[in-house]
Picture: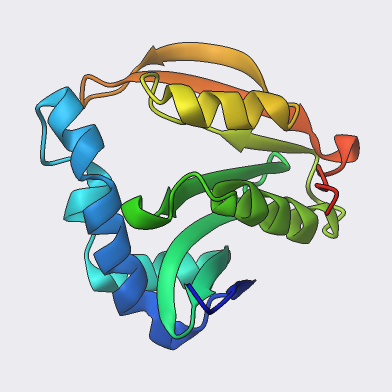
Length: 167
């Protein structure tokens, strides 16, 4: 490739590129459910900007291109809700999802209000489930949302720390 991928906090000017990436990355989930009205595909740029303003977001860049992203916020109960972990299809299986998860967990671990980390991946995301379980996440509830996707909430205590891969 010739360039290395860098992880950094998202900037306000990244919003449009994050939204385009989100639209691309959630096509498969929409196809699996037969529902193209899922929130990641209908979210507006203004709604995404509000998400970014109200929480934390990290991106992975290959040069100037945003190739992966994750975002989240801490709710009043102390749950750091991590979501929209997405990696461009051509960049998958290179460890970017794990690196982004580490980055956002590290950021939330610095906040004394964070008691636990929580993710809610679609139930059919086997590769993602392996990643989350390898990072110490365990199922806490299962169900379905109004998009007919099977959902499994995964949590781990914030005090469990983050996984740091050895080089």
